[in-house]
Structure formats: C-alpha cells, structure tokens
Image 1: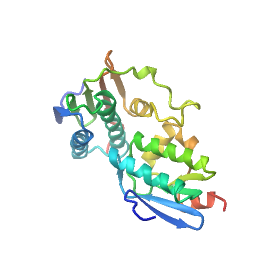
Image 2: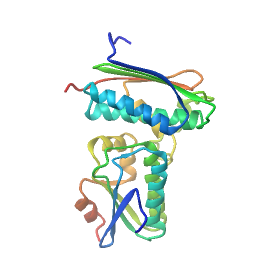
Image 3: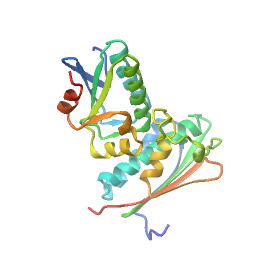
Length: 119
Length: 142
C-alpha cells in the first residue's frame, strides 16, 4: 500500500478500511490523485471488500462524489463490494439530496460497516 | 435584495484557474465565519460556491488564461448573495439530466447544479447561461 498520499488503507481481515487524509476534498489535483489511489485498491491490490471511512472529512465536492461513483462501478465489476461510514450530518444530507444514499450502502460507524459485509 | 446593510462585500475579477477560485472562496468562507455563520448554513453556502466556481472556471471558461470570472459576494448577518459571471458560451441548466433519475444516478453530470438549487434559497441564471445569481437566507440563529 506504499505511495498513497490522499488516503490511508488499513486491512482488517478481508476488509480494506480507507480513511482520507484531507479534511476538505475539493482541490482538483487532489481529487484526481484520490481517485487513482482508490482505484488502485480495487484494480491492483485486488481488494474485494472496501469500506470508506469519512471520519474527519468536513467537506467534499461533486467532483469527489463522481470518483466514488466510479469506484463503486469498478468494485462491482470486479465482483467486490463498497460501503461507506462515518459521514458527518451535512455530508450525509448531500448523499440524501442526490439520492446517492440509494447507490451506496452507508453505515454509521466503522464497526457497523465491517459487520455489514457479513464475512 | 431587501437586506438593508451588507457587512462584507467583495467584487473582483479572477483568472480562470481553480487555485484562484479557491482563494476567492476562502475569502468568502472566512467572512462567513467572522459574521457567525456555521453549521448547515455555512456548509450549504460552501457547497454552492464550490460547485458554481468550478462550473464557471472549468466548464464555462474551460480554464482559459484569456478569460476571467467576475465575482460578487455580499454578506449580511442573515443573508448571503453571490453572483458569478464567466466568459464562456453559457449552458442551459434546465437541459441537464436529472441526476436523481434511476437511469442517471450513477452518472457524473448535473449533480453540482442540482446541489446549488437544493441548498440555496434562490438561484437564477441569465439567458445566455454564463451568469449564476444565488442567495441564501440563514435558517438558524446561533
């Protein structure tokens, strides 16, 4: 998992728990980098069960949401599963407004998220 | 606008770079904090200006060094008014696919414009579609 600058990946059993370095995910170059690092977890590291933990993330733009959508597609195409947890109330509202709460399975805590994989 | 007095006003023309856009956004966010905006209201304005600025610089002006974005912010205790004008060809915000439709919910288009509409009190575009004007009435008192 060396070389990642925007995310930290911690493997807990079969689940890769991903945390974000940036409190605000807005910068275009950082979002591109974040996307590439997330895609690496699926495409190169071949991890099937990915939990994105947004604890500490205060803000993210629609450009960042688009990367999450792409990640979800890649995970599904590889036969994997993607879940989210730790979203603060304001970010959860964004997912609800855009109905992305129907696309992603969102859990409150990291423990809930790991358990939801049913492994 | 019926707001009798603005506490803070910023009028400037900025180059078509996202770095310049974010520096200008940071000025607005600092002013919001200074005048007591926080919580959901702060977040909603932050999301709306982020999406509108990216639209103007990236999709409107296509980050051309020949073009600029005119920025106008007015901030009061209970309301904020924002206008961005780019020098692009403009777009029709009503012609975008609804990103909440089942067929489009996983597509990367239209979500920013929708969020602006949902999070601000009012949003209007000029006929050409290169100018967005929006305002938000503060919903909570702290």
